[in-house]
Length: 397
Ligand code: ATP
Ligand code: MG
Image 1 (cartoon, rainbow, N blue to C red):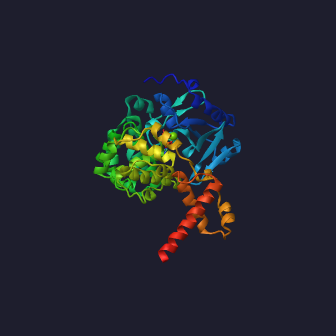
Image 2 (image 1 turned 30 degrees about the horizontal axis):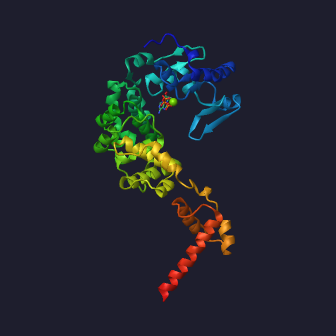
Image 3 (image 1 turned 60 degrees about the vertical axis):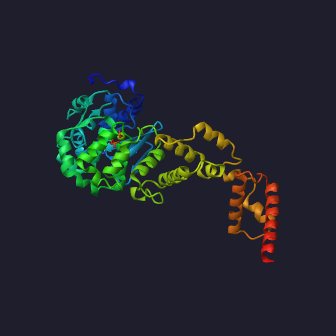
């Protein structure tokens, strides 16, 4: 790898961030791109997000840019929205760029890039990038002042394929237990990234070697489940819903309450739970129209992808699409009858009965046993009503 020539102009994502740097500079402040963006630029990798460090205080950053947001738990960071993109702008620690860089987690994350393309690299992170080694400046200090960095170290090896510097590795081995005091949501975020990395299996072996898995707060992460996780295919191209479902399956967590302890968002928890339920349905059954309708198309598609990834027989996307197109309705909204219609027709007070009948109608329409037409539905209900009455009278006699 050669780093002398920084081709900032060739990188659209970096290029887009330059006006943010220039605005801060124009007001007399230092401003640099730091962290993952510089590292990924130097490695020729795709850049996800651009983090900026500046000598301006957060209140000043807020006044310089028209669209800014602050986060409760990160007082020194302001999110700046510029040209439809978000930038995390953080004030330099200890009022100096050099000391901010020296206090960062790893040398490869401690390189700063100025708007003119020049680099500041006080810890010679470029040499470590070149040698593909993840190293910390004073690892004992770095790892103990924020023990999450131990897990970050291993997740970076998973992502980048780097080896861990010996001193850093030894530090993780001796300090591993400190990870258990970290906030679970921070840990889970890093663990997720570790699982998604190209070099996941090597990273999982390091988790084992350092015993960090033991303090990782992930339920049921042990020697057996690590082996299961190692058998997963590469997951970088799959959605969060699919990836989490696969992780939960490997960990063998309870389907009824799988993610609560991981503190994932409510929405993600719901999506994963739906996939787990549909997966266990599919273990014993083929899709039928009602099951497909109930699961929803997205869930059914993901279930088949997960089955394919797990080496189980699966229904192709094409067949699933054909089956989906056979559904008379694809959501409750498609029903040509409403609760108001039912109340008017039966001339009864609104109540839970409306929901019950609507649910029944929905099921009958999906199964093709009722035609999705208001009058046909009301007629069918009438026939059914008098049939029920007859049966009740017969029962009584
Ligand atoms: P990714 O490509 O996954 O976004 P990243 O290096 O950008 O990787 P982030 O978690 O986005 O990682 O953090 C941005 C930068 O902030 C890092 O490169 C690092 O310099 C610094 N940083 C983040 N978290 C920590 C931490 N816990 N300790 C020290 N520095 C950190
Ligand atoms: Mg980042």
